Figure (cartoon, rainbow, N blue to C red):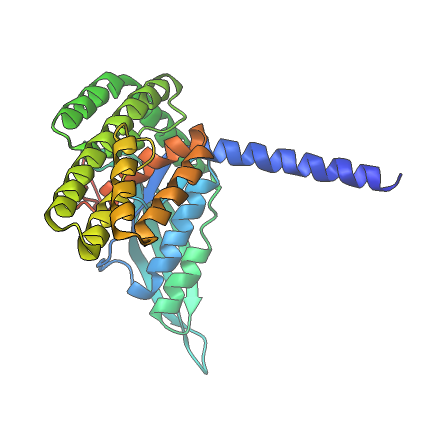
Amino acid sequence: MKRIPQLILGLAALAVAAQASAQASRNVPLTVYVPEQAEYLPEIAHAAMANKMRQVVNLNGMGATDDRGQFYITCTVSVTDKEVVGTAPAKIAQKMDVTFYVADALGKKMYGTTTVSVRGVGENENKAYIAALKQIAPTQPALKALIRDANAKIIAYYESQCDNILQQVQTLALAKQYEAAFFQLSLIPEACETCYARVLTTANALFQKYIDDRAQANLAKARSIWNAGQDREAAEEAGEYLAEILPDATCYPQAEALAKEIKSKVREDLDFYREMYVRQVEYEQKNTQDSIKAWRDVGVAYGNNQQAVTYAPVFVD
């Protein structure tokens, strides 16, 4: 009987963890950005600064991410005083003002800023920098207010711009720029409840078109290659395109038929045929969450490969 309270506590812990995970998925994402070449911050301190900003974001109600997004947090560091202290060996003491910014990379607008003053002591300037950064308390009132206000403004932005964003998405889709369309949709957080419901409807419809368009193109290439060769070499080359056709595609039955035709003529168990079977089994086991992840992954991958989103240490509104 003594184990029952432990079991109850364990279940309660799991429930709390599940609730925390669900809440995390709803947090508005904020890209963490430390400029690669920033004169105001030694390179050795970049990782420490990035980790500090992640703490500031995550501990105050938003979700830190390294993925490219429209809204981001960055900072500048200004040394206000420096002196040598102690002897054998002497150490460097630095006072610094660390200014945090939350900004809109596309709209070129500031969404909030605050400055935190800290002091660090180390054997050299770099170690003094890192020691000072460690003194920043992520949940201090100024930083908490910065993230809270930015979160509210970003949600308000997406709710007010929802119609415009979805219109841009449809324009991109008509031009068959599906990856760019999914990138725009992936930026809208689940916390924007009214808009996010429309995002899901739009994304699911576009993802089917995206799958079908890619599948038709791959099927056409596979047929062309197979019809031209009809030997093992042609079978393997055509199979590379057939293996890219997802079971959800409307032309998947035709892809299966061509795969069977190729297998019957080549009379070998080719790798691509097994891969098609594996994909079919995996898709039969998928759920709605998998579908959401699928189109988001396409959009995030597109965004991370683009150079269009430009981040900077400071924006002037």
